[in-house]
Image (cartoon, rainbow, N blue to C red; front, side, top):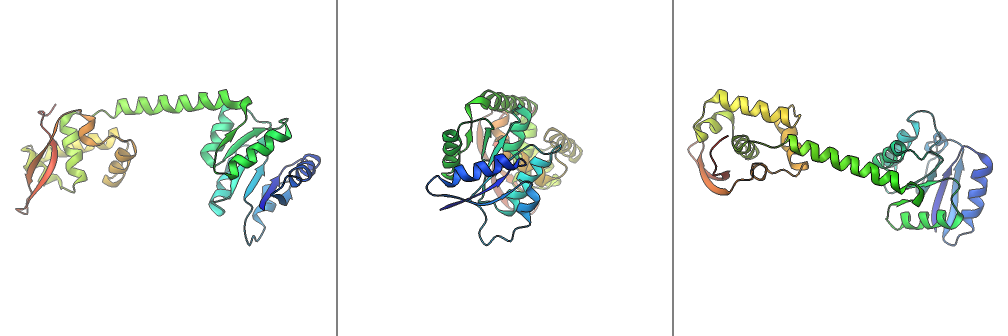
Length: 245
């Protein structure tokens, strides 16, 4: 039996939803309230499997509620049930952790279908808002593409990134590549700026998340070139064979 909670400001809608959903085999409305604060006051032995959440809340409070629900009960699914149909609201809800989005005025069979699909581990959007969802997705893709264009590295920057990832220090990199320490520091600062990073850990994390391994960025052939470290040991490191830009 799936437990469902309803957070809806209008009592007549909330009570009507409770009656209709409870008639569906396998569903029970375990909790209902007019505001999310009542939800967070509950000492759940087991939280609801799904929360039907009205998004008609002041400013960005609804988004904060979604985040708080996922923070407290990660496995609990969230189906947004609202009048808000703007692209901004829809995308913000999914980014915050919503599992589905459906507009008020939908049919009962469509609502039940949405609940079932979400409980089965799928995402759901009603057909009425599909254009907004697609438009939001395309905007994100374009932003990622624009960012990737800004992440193109010279072959020398790619070499440095590879060596930084391998744990080499500035002096070791300078000796290995036969360049000055100041040149290494300059390239390193450029990498930080391009990836908007303030330390090496963030630099490597952002580069990895962006899916841009150092040598793939400069699109050069990779070979195993031994690099002699200051300790005297020799470690094979994949480096680009092209001359620095």
